Image (cartoon, rainbow over all chains, first blue to last red; front, top):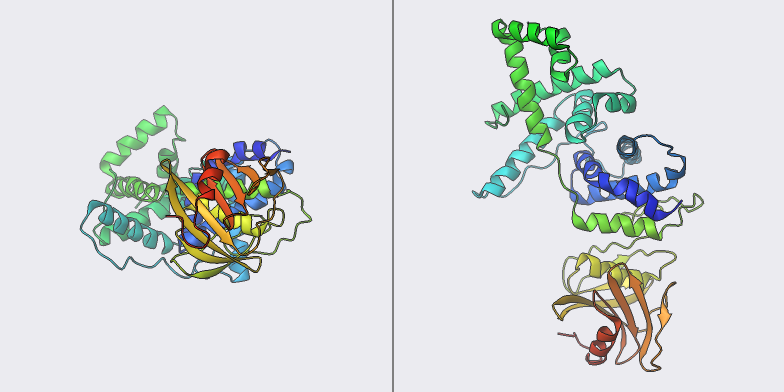
Length: 171
Length: 217
């Protein structure tokens, strides 16, 4: 099994893994560690991966790696798998569009972190990770319909929470 | 009252055409379901806004780590913060000139060499690092429009696997390629390691002109 074969198969999904790792970590450094740990585990298990979907395989590894780190207590800021803390609010307020967008993102991240765990995980997998409900169901070990309901309820709560903060997006 | 039993399958696209049309007719007269659909779509857009592109440096970091790894399960799986559990990559946490930090290295790549290569990839600013117990002074310069990372050490940089000895018999010790980077080790005017996306000959000629003990700029 060559490194290149592995990288060709997995690197196209780096953005997905990164997006999920970001929601599992409170800072960039933690997310980068988690992504690297994910790829380390994936590389070790690549020979046994078979012909399954690589993206959902990587996502599942990322979630498991995040859980492991949480259990080890090496990072207390994990916010998906049993989070306790929300990301810190930005300290600087700039009036530029980029800064406002950043503030919006922080607010969305905080609202996401405030959702019940099962809803948050479903949203991370489906809306942020881009997995299908079926793929998320396999990872979560729950029926597809349950995942769809969790996603729906989570989205609604997200919209309500952010409406209170005056943040609107979408239709 | 929200009719989730039909609303959720409707949003998921699970209803057939007739069922979907019937539910849309229901939506017109059901404020709760209408609001639920609206909130679902807003919430989805908000959540999707959290998707992020991975930093470019992370792609290199992962690639380098995997390529350096033997892929064998017998490798110790202790966690190395910012280095990656069980993987062989050097990541520098240098944030300010003159700072001294510890660098963990690839067991197969000499640590000091890996440190300089990684600093070149991550465009680490001038700094002093400690690699395998040796202090390496990192400097940066521009040459032919390219960034050059210079590592200085009190002892010679070890020759890594895959490197070739310089054939000119002078002060170039060895040359290696690490991705796009050419890595050149010189013994004069000092123990130098140069890393840049430039031909080896150009780096060697340039490196020979560097001062023995100060920065290259």
